[in-house]
Length: 379
Image (tube, rainbow, N blue to C red):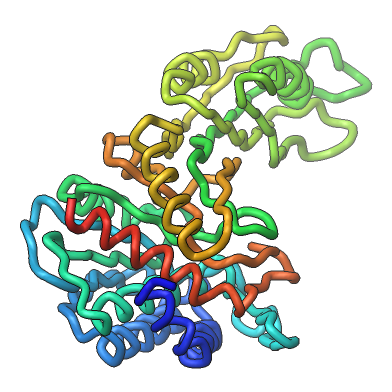
Protein backbone atom coordinates (compact mmCIF):
# COMPACT_ATOMS: atom_id res chain seq x y z
CA UNK A 1 0.00 0.00 0.00
CA UNK A 2 1.26 3.47 -0.81
CA UNK A 3 2.49 5.64 2.04
CA UNK A 4 -0.05 8.33 1.16
CA UNK A 5 -3.03 5.98 1.02
CA UNK A 6 -1.97 4.27 4.24
CA UNK A 7 -1.80 7.65 5.98
CA UNK A 8 -5.22 8.74 4.69
CA UNK A 9 -6.94 5.49 5.62
CA UNK A 10 -5.85 6.09 9.21
CA UNK A 11 -7.39 9.58 8.99
CA UNK A 12 -10.81 8.36 7.78
CA UNK A 13 -12.77 9.71 10.74
CA UNK A 14 -11.02 13.08 10.57
CA UNK A 15 -11.69 13.35 6.83
CA UNK A 16 -15.36 12.57 7.45
CA UNK A 17 -15.49 15.27 10.12
CA UNK A 18 -14.10 17.85 7.68
CA UNK A 19 -16.77 16.96 5.14
CA UNK A 20 -19.50 17.18 7.77
CA UNK A 21 -18.20 20.55 8.95
CA UNK A 22 -18.19 22.00 5.43
CA UNK A 23 -21.62 20.55 4.63
CA UNK A 24 -23.13 22.10 7.76
CA UNK A 25 -21.75 25.47 6.61
CA UNK A 26 -24.56 25.91 4.07
CA UNK A 27 -23.57 28.20 1.23
CA UNK A 28 -26.24 29.05 -1.37
CA UNK A 29 -24.81 30.94 -4.34
CA UNK A 30 -27.16 33.87 -3.78
CA UNK A 31 -26.55 34.31 -0.03
CA UNK A 32 -23.27 36.13 0.43
CA UNK A 33 -23.41 36.13 4.23
CA UNK A 34 -23.77 32.36 4.40
CA UNK A 35 -21.18 31.71 1.69
CA UNK A 36 -18.70 34.05 3.40
CA UNK A 37 -19.22 32.11 6.63
CA UNK A 38 -18.46 28.88 4.76
CA UNK A 39 -15.34 30.50 3.34
CA UNK A 40 -14.10 31.37 6.82
CA UNK A 41 -14.64 27.77 7.90
CA UNK A 42 -12.82 26.48 4.82
CA UNK A 43 -9.93 28.88 5.55
CA UNK A 44 -9.81 27.60 9.13
CA UNK A 45 -9.63 24.01 7.90
CA UNK A 46 -6.82 24.90 5.48
CA UNK A 47 -4.89 26.68 8.23
CA UNK A 48 -5.42 23.81 10.64
CA UNK A 49 -4.54 21.01 8.25
CA UNK A 50 -1.95 22.51 5.90
CA UNK A 51 -0.91 25.97 6.98
CA UNK A 52 0.12 27.39 3.61
CA UNK A 53 -0.53 30.81 2.12
CA UNK A 54 -4.09 32.19 1.94
CA UNK A 55 -5.36 35.01 -0.27
CA UNK A 56 -8.94 36.17 0.22
CA UNK A 57 -10.40 37.65 -2.96
CA UNK A 58 -13.09 40.13 -1.93
CA UNK A 59 -16.40 40.11 -3.77
CA UNK A 60 -19.45 42.34 -3.39
CA UNK A 61 -22.17 40.46 -5.28
CA UNK A 62 -21.24 36.91 -4.26
CA UNK A 63 -19.22 35.27 -1.52
CA UNK A 64 -15.54 36.06 -1.13
CA UNK A 65 -13.25 33.68 -2.99
CA UNK A 66 -10.02 32.08 -1.85
CA UNK A 67 -6.64 31.14 -3.25
CA UNK A 68 -4.82 28.64 -1.05
CA UNK A 69 -1.18 27.94 -1.87
CA UNK A 70 1.15 25.21 -0.63
CA UNK A 71 4.79 24.64 -1.50
CA UNK A 72 7.30 26.60 -3.55
CA UNK A 73 7.86 26.87 -7.24
CA UNK A 74 7.68 29.06 -10.30
CA UNK A 75 4.61 31.32 -10.33
CA UNK A 76 4.11 30.54 -14.03
CA UNK A 77 4.29 26.75 -13.70
CA UNK A 78 1.93 25.76 -10.89
CA UNK A 79 -0.40 22.85 -10.23
CA UNK A 80 -3.94 24.27 -10.16
CA UNK A 81 -6.87 22.67 -8.36
CA UNK A 82 -10.24 24.38 -8.89
CA UNK A 83 -13.27 23.99 -6.66
CA UNK A 84 -16.36 25.91 -5.60
CA UNK A 85 -18.10 26.22 -2.25
CA UNK A 86 -21.46 27.55 -3.46
CA UNK A 87 -24.42 25.18 -3.76
CA UNK A 88 -27.84 25.18 -5.43
CA UNK A 89 -29.62 24.73 -2.09
CA UNK A 90 -31.36 27.40 -0.02
CA UNK A 91 -30.54 27.30 3.68
CA UNK A 92 -32.48 24.53 5.41
CA UNK A 93 -33.87 23.11 2.15
CA UNK A 94 -32.17 19.74 2.56
CA UNK A 95 -31.56 17.84 5.81
CA UNK A 96 -28.07 16.66 6.75
CA UNK A 97 -28.08 13.06 7.88
CA UNK A 98 -25.79 10.05 8.04
CA UNK A 99 -26.97 6.53 7.39
CA UNK A 100 -24.09 4.13 7.95
CA UNK A 101 -21.32 5.08 5.53
CA UNK A 102 -23.52 7.44 3.48
CA UNK A 103 -23.70 11.15 4.23
CA UNK A 104 -26.61 13.15 2.82
CA UNK A 105 -26.79 16.92 2.66
CA UNK A 106 -26.81 20.13 0.60
CA UNK A 107 -23.73 20.27 -1.59
CA UNK A 108 -22.14 17.23 0.04
CA UNK A 109 -21.46 15.73 -3.41
CA UNK A 110 -21.36 18.96 -5.45
CA UNK A 111 -18.94 19.90 -4.17
CA UNK A 112 -18.10 19.97 -0.47
CA UNK A 113 -16.85 16.42 -1.01
CA UNK A 114 -14.34 17.67 -3.57
CA UNK A 115 -13.15 20.44 -1.26
CA UNK A 116 -12.63 17.87 1.49
CA UNK A 117 -10.72 15.51 -0.80
CA UNK A 118 -8.43 18.37 -1.87
CA UNK A 119 -7.69 19.57 1.66
CA UNK A 120 -6.77 16.07 2.76
CA UNK A 121 -4.76 15.35 -0.38
CA UNK A 122 -2.64 18.41 0.43
CA UNK A 123 -2.50 17.39 4.08
CA UNK A 124 -1.23 13.93 3.09
CA UNK A 125 1.49 15.40 0.88
CA UNK A 126 2.62 17.56 3.78
CA UNK A 127 2.53 14.83 6.44
CA UNK A 128 4.30 12.22 4.32
CA UNK A 129 7.09 14.66 3.45
CA UNK A 130 6.42 14.60 -0.30
CA UNK A 131 8.80 16.81 -2.26
CA UNK A 132 7.31 18.98 -5.03
CA UNK A 133 9.08 21.11 -7.62
CA UNK A 134 5.84 22.92 -8.41
CA UNK A 135 3.60 24.73 -5.95
CA UNK A 136 -0.07 23.81 -5.54
CA UNK A 137 -2.70 26.52 -5.92
CA UNK A 138 -6.16 25.57 -4.69
CA UNK A 139 -8.65 28.12 -6.04
CA UNK A 140 -12.12 28.05 -4.45
CA UNK A 141 -14.88 30.15 -6.01
CA UNK A 142 -18.39 31.05 -4.89
CA UNK A 143 -20.48 31.44 -8.04
CA UNK A 144 -19.93 28.30 -10.14
CA UNK A 145 -23.56 27.22 -9.79
CA UNK A 146 -24.77 30.53 -11.23
CA UNK A 147 -22.42 30.82 -14.18
CA UNK A 148 -19.03 31.91 -12.71
CA UNK A 149 -19.55 35.51 -13.80
CA UNK A 150 -17.51 36.87 -10.90
CA UNK A 151 -14.79 34.22 -10.91
CA UNK A 152 -14.10 33.52 -14.58
CA UNK A 153 -11.36 36.14 -14.93
CA UNK A 154 -9.67 34.87 -11.77
CA UNK A 155 -9.83 31.28 -13.03
CA UNK A 156 -8.37 32.24 -16.39
CA UNK A 157 -5.51 34.20 -14.81
CA UNK A 158 -4.57 31.24 -12.64
CA UNK A 159 -4.97 28.78 -15.53
CA UNK A 160 -2.54 30.77 -17.66
CA UNK A 161 0.08 30.21 -14.94
CA UNK A 162 -0.57 26.48 -14.67
CA UNK A 163 1.12 23.32 -15.91
CA UNK A 164 -1.99 21.21 -15.36
CA UNK A 165 -5.47 21.58 -13.82
CA UNK A 166 -7.31 19.12 -11.58
CA UNK A 167 -11.02 19.61 -10.89
CA UNK A 168 -12.42 17.67 -7.89
CA UNK A 169 -16.04 18.02 -9.00
CA UNK A 170 -18.39 15.09 -8.38
CA UNK A 171 -17.45 11.81 -10.04
CA UNK A 172 -19.64 9.71 -12.35
CA UNK A 173 -21.68 6.68 -11.40
CA UNK A 174 -21.34 4.14 -8.63
CA UNK A 175 -17.71 3.37 -9.49
CA UNK A 176 -16.49 6.99 -9.40
CA UNK A 177 -15.42 7.45 -13.01
CA UNK A 178 -13.45 10.63 -13.74
CA UNK A 179 -14.58 13.06 -16.42
CA UNK A 180 -12.39 13.20 -19.50
CA UNK A 181 -15.04 15.14 -21.44
CA UNK A 182 -17.57 17.83 -20.64
CA UNK A 183 -19.97 19.52 -23.00
CA UNK A 184 -19.73 23.20 -23.67
CA UNK A 185 -22.77 25.33 -22.92
CA UNK A 186 -24.39 28.44 -24.32
CA UNK A 187 -27.53 30.43 -23.60
CA UNK A 188 -29.56 32.63 -25.92
CA UNK A 189 -32.61 34.84 -25.57
CA UNK A 190 -35.01 35.13 -28.50
CA UNK A 191 -37.43 38.07 -28.36
CA UNK A 192 -40.25 38.48 -30.88
CA UNK A 193 -42.33 41.58 -31.56
CA UNK A 194 -45.61 41.04 -33.40
CA UNK A 195 -48.66 43.14 -34.21
CA UNK A 196 -51.55 43.02 -31.78
CA UNK A 197 -55.15 42.82 -32.96
CA UNK A 198 -58.54 41.59 -31.80
CA UNK A 199 -58.60 37.82 -32.26
CA UNK A 200 -62.21 37.87 -33.53
CA UNK A 201 -62.84 41.21 -35.22
CA UNK A 202 -59.60 41.74 -37.19
CA UNK A 203 -57.49 38.64 -36.64
CA UNK A 204 -55.94 38.80 -40.12
CA UNK A 205 -54.50 42.26 -39.45
CA UNK A 206 -52.35 41.00 -36.60
CA UNK A 207 -49.04 39.13 -36.58
CA UNK A 208 -48.80 36.74 -33.65
CA UNK A 209 -45.49 36.72 -31.79
CA UNK A 210 -46.53 33.42 -30.21
CA UNK A 211 -47.16 31.80 -33.58
CA UNK A 212 -43.76 33.00 -34.78
CA UNK A 213 -42.24 31.57 -31.58
CA UNK A 214 -43.85 28.19 -32.24
CA UNK A 215 -42.24 28.04 -35.68
CA UNK A 216 -38.91 29.17 -34.21
CA UNK A 217 -38.94 26.39 -31.62
CA UNK A 218 -39.55 23.73 -34.25
CA UNK A 219 -36.80 25.16 -36.43
CA UNK A 220 -34.32 25.45 -33.57
CA UNK A 221 -34.84 21.81 -32.62
CA UNK A 222 -33.55 20.85 -36.08
CA UNK A 223 -30.11 22.00 -34.93
CA UNK A 224 -29.90 19.19 -32.36
CA UNK A 225 -27.75 16.26 -33.42
CA UNK A 226 -27.50 13.29 -31.12
CA UNK A 227 -24.62 11.68 -33.02
CA UNK A 228 -22.59 14.91 -32.84
CA UNK A 229 -23.50 15.54 -29.21
CA UNK A 230 -25.39 18.78 -29.94
CA UNK A 231 -28.51 19.47 -27.90
CA UNK A 232 -30.85 22.47 -28.14
CA UNK A 233 -33.48 23.05 -25.49
CA UNK A 234 -36.07 25.83 -25.33
CA UNK A 235 -36.57 25.78 -21.59
CA UNK A 236 -38.57 28.93 -20.87
CA UNK A 237 -41.23 30.62 -23.03
CA UNK A 238 -43.33 33.71 -22.38
CA UNK A 239 -45.84 35.58 -24.48
CA UNK A 240 -49.22 37.16 -24.91
CA UNK A 241 -51.57 39.00 -22.62
CA UNK A 242 -55.08 37.62 -23.18
CA UNK A 243 -56.70 34.74 -25.01
CA UNK A 244 -58.62 37.05 -27.37
CA UNK A 245 -55.67 39.28 -28.33
CA UNK A 246 -53.17 38.46 -31.07
CA UNK A 247 -49.91 38.34 -29.12
CA UNK A 248 -47.66 41.36 -29.64
CA UNK A 249 -44.71 39.94 -27.71
CA UNK A 250 -43.13 36.57 -27.00
CA UNK A 251 -39.74 35.29 -25.95
CA UNK A 252 -37.82 32.10 -25.37
CA UNK A 253 -34.71 31.14 -23.39
CA UNK A 254 -32.55 28.64 -25.27
CA UNK A 255 -29.93 26.27 -23.87
CA UNK A 256 -27.31 24.87 -26.28
CA UNK A 257 -24.78 22.11 -25.52
CA UNK A 258 -21.84 21.14 -27.71
CA UNK A 259 -19.03 18.57 -27.61
CA UNK A 260 -16.49 20.28 -29.86
CA UNK A 261 -15.23 23.85 -29.92
CA UNK A 262 -15.57 23.85 -33.71
CA UNK A 263 -19.36 23.52 -33.39
CA UNK A 264 -19.69 26.77 -31.47
CA UNK A 265 -19.18 29.32 -34.24
CA UNK A 266 -21.58 27.72 -36.72
CA UNK A 267 -24.35 27.22 -34.16
CA UNK A 268 -23.97 30.74 -32.80
CA UNK A 269 -24.25 32.20 -36.30
CA UNK A 270 -27.42 30.20 -37.06
CA UNK A 271 -29.10 31.05 -33.77
CA UNK A 272 -28.28 34.77 -33.87
CA UNK A 273 -29.51 35.13 -37.45
CA UNK A 274 -32.95 33.55 -37.37
CA UNK A 275 -35.26 33.51 -40.42
CA UNK A 276 -38.82 34.88 -40.18
CA UNK A 277 -41.87 32.65 -40.56
CA UNK A 278 -44.74 35.11 -39.92
CA UNK A 279 -44.95 38.35 -41.90
CA UNK A 280 -44.99 41.41 -39.67
CA UNK A 281 -42.93 39.98 -36.82
CA UNK A 282 -39.52 41.25 -35.74
CA UNK A 283 -36.84 39.11 -34.08
CA UNK A 284 -34.02 40.01 -31.70
CA UNK A 285 -31.60 37.32 -30.54
CA UNK A 286 -28.84 37.76 -27.98
CA UNK A 287 -26.49 35.33 -26.28
CA UNK A 288 -23.36 33.26 -26.82
CA UNK A 289 -21.54 30.05 -26.04
CA UNK A 290 -20.42 30.74 -22.48
CA UNK A 291 -18.26 27.67 -21.87
CA UNK A 292 -16.44 25.76 -24.55
CA UNK A 293 -16.23 21.99 -24.13
CA UNK A 294 -13.59 20.12 -22.22
CA UNK A 295 -12.47 17.83 -25.01
CA UNK A 296 -10.79 14.44 -24.70
CA UNK A 297 -7.42 15.48 -26.06
CA UNK A 298 -4.19 13.48 -26.03
CA UNK A 299 -3.10 15.39 -22.93
CA UNK A 300 -6.34 14.52 -21.15
CA UNK A 301 -6.01 10.86 -22.15
CA UNK A 302 -2.49 10.81 -20.67
CA UNK A 303 -3.80 12.32 -17.44
CA UNK A 304 -6.42 9.61 -17.29
CA UNK A 305 -3.87 6.86 -17.93
CA UNK A 306 -1.70 8.20 -15.12
CA UNK A 307 -4.70 8.24 -12.78
CA UNK A 308 -5.57 4.69 -13.85
CA UNK A 309 -2.08 3.54 -12.92
CA UNK A 310 -2.33 5.15 -9.48
CA UNK A 311 -5.78 3.64 -8.89
CA UNK A 312 -4.52 0.20 -9.93
CA UNK A 313 -1.73 0.48 -7.36
CA UNK A 314 -4.45 1.19 -4.77
CA UNK A 315 -6.31 -1.97 -5.78
CA UNK A 316 -9.15 -0.79 -8.02
CA UNK A 317 -9.96 0.08 -11.61
CA UNK A 318 -10.62 3.72 -12.44
CA UNK A 319 -13.02 4.36 -15.31
CA UNK A 320 -13.67 7.46 -17.39
CA UNK A 321 -16.81 9.14 -18.68
CA UNK A 322 -18.33 12.34 -20.01
CA UNK A 323 -20.81 14.86 -18.67
CA UNK A 324 -23.46 16.95 -20.38
CA UNK A 325 -22.95 19.64 -17.76
CA UNK A 326 -20.15 22.19 -17.73
CA UNK A 327 -17.78 23.18 -14.94
CA UNK A 328 -15.03 25.71 -14.38
CA UNK A 329 -12.70 23.14 -15.92
CA UNK A 330 -14.22 24.07 -19.28
CA UNK A 331 -12.57 27.49 -18.96
CA UNK A 332 -9.10 26.10 -18.34
CA UNK A 333 -9.44 23.53 -21.13
CA UNK A 334 -10.48 26.32 -23.51
CA UNK A 335 -7.01 27.89 -23.37
CA UNK A 336 -5.26 24.56 -23.84
CA UNK A 337 -4.17 23.73 -20.29
CA UNK A 338 -4.45 19.94 -19.71
CA UNK A 339 -7.52 19.54 -17.49
CA UNK A 340 -9.24 16.52 -15.99
CA UNK A 341 -12.48 16.64 -14.01
CA UNK A 342 -14.59 14.48 -11.72
CA UNK A 343 -11.88 13.82 -9.12
CA UNK A 344 -14.29 14.26 -6.23
CA UNK A 345 -15.60 11.36 -4.13
CA UNK A 346 -18.02 8.63 -5.11
CA UNK A 347 -21.65 9.58 -4.53
CA UNK A 348 -24.78 10.56 -6.39
CA UNK A 349 -27.71 12.95 -6.54
CA UNK A 350 -26.03 16.25 -7.35
CA UNK A 351 -28.72 18.99 -7.32
CA UNK A 352 -31.31 16.46 -6.07
CA UNK A 353 -32.83 15.63 -2.69
CA UNK A 354 -30.87 12.37 -2.77
CA UNK A 355 -27.48 14.11 -2.84
CA UNK A 356 -24.98 11.98 -0.95
CA UNK A 357 -21.38 10.79 -0.64
CA UNK A 358 -19.94 7.36 0.15
CA UNK A 359 -17.68 8.05 3.14
CA UNK A 360 -15.67 4.85 2.74
CA UNK A 361 -14.23 6.18 -0.50
CA UNK A 362 -12.87 9.48 0.84
CA UNK A 363 -9.32 8.27 1.69
CA UNK A 364 -8.99 6.64 -1.73
CA UNK A 365 -10.06 9.77 -3.64
CA UNK A 366 -7.80 11.98 -1.53
CA UNK A 367 -4.91 9.58 -2.20
CA UNK A 368 -5.68 9.54 -5.93
CA UNK A 369 -5.55 13.35 -6.08
CA UNK A 370 -2.47 13.56 -3.86
CA UNK A 371 -0.49 11.09 -5.95
CA UNK A 372 -1.40 12.63 -9.32
CA UNK A 373 -0.37 16.04 -7.90
CA UNK A 374 2.89 14.47 -6.73
CA UNK A 375 3.54 12.98 -10.18
CA UNK A 376 2.85 16.18 -12.10
CA UNK A 377 4.37 18.36 -9.40
CA UNK A 378 7.73 16.80 -10.18
CA UNK A 379 7.54 16.51 -14.00
